[in-house]
Image 1 (cartoon, rainbow, N blue to C red):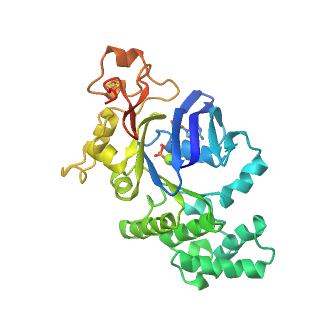
Image 2 (cartoon, helix red, strand yellow):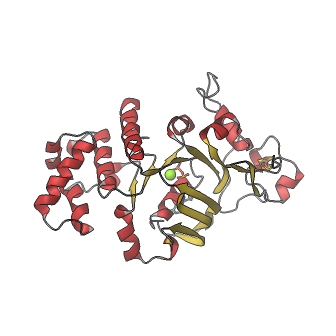
Image 3 (spheres, rainbow, N blue to C red):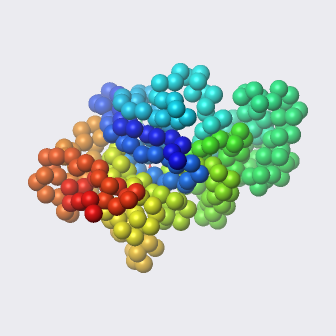
Length: 318
Ligand code: ATP
Ligand code: SF4
Ligand code: MG
C-alpha cells in the first residue's frame, strides 16, 4: 500500500539568472515499509524532491504543480504550522551533514528531548531527557553521550544523534539525503545497518544517494532521476539486472563493482542547464541512441513490465 503518493510534481527555483526546472512532472509512490532509493548525478533534483515532502524547499524554490498525498491529505496545500507538526511526528529527515541540523551550543540529549516536548508527547523535561538517553542506546551510543555537545562527537556519532532526533517519535517515513557521504566506509556501514533496523520495524525509508552500488545493496526499489525527470523505477532486480533507460545503463556501467569492471567510466557529457533544459528527451545530448524523435518529443513514462517503468522512445510495453 502507498504511504505517500507523489503526483505530477514540478518544482522551480526562481533565480535572478532564470527559472531552474529542478523537478519536472515526477510521479511515484512510497510504499508502506519499503526502502526506496533515488539515484542520479549531482544536480538531478534528488534533494529538491526530498525537501518538498517535508515542506522545506528552500527559497527561491517553489512547488509549481502536483500533489504529495499522505494520509488522505495533500501536503503541498498544508500551512507551515500543519507541516511543522507532520515533520518529526510522521516524517523524519536526516541530511548529509548533521552539523546543519544540530545546534552546536546545546547538549545533544536536550536536542533529542526537545522533540518530545515540542510535539506535546511529554511535558516534563526530566522524563524527556530519560527518553533521550533510551533513544541514544537504540542508535548505538552510550546514554552518557546525552551531556555531550555536537563538536565532542565524531561525524558518525553526530549522524546517529540526527537519526535519533528524526526517529524519536517513530515516524512512518525516514528521508535520508546522502546520510553517509561524509563518513568513512566502515562508519557508513553502521549507519546503513541502523536504518535497516528501523526498516525492519516497519518504517519506510526514502534514501537519496549518487551511489548506485549502495542503493542496490539496501533497497527494495530504485528510482533513477536525470535532469529533474524520473526516468526509471522498478525493483532492485529489475533496475540493476534489466535496466531499460539508456541513462540507467550508463550509470550501471560507470560503477566498477556492479558489472565486474575494474575502472570507473564516467558518462560522457554534462547534465544540461536546468534553466533551459533540452527539448524532447532531456538525455538526448548525451544519449548514444538518440534519434530525431528524441530531439522533438518528450518520451512518456511507460510500464514495460509489472512495476518497472521508464521513459524512452525506444521502449515498448511487453
Ligand atoms: P546533489 O547530488 O549534488 O545533492 P541533487 O540531485 O540533490 O544534487 P538538487 O540539489 O535538488 O540536486 O538540485 C537540482 C537543481 O536545482 C540543480 O540545477 C541546482 O543547481 C538547483 N538548485 C538547488 N537548490 C537551489 C537553490 N537554493 N537555488 C537555486 N537553484 C537551486
Ligand atoms: Fe535516448 Fe531517445 Fe531514449 Fe532519450 S528517448 S534516452 S534520447 S533513445
Ligand atoms: Mg542533493
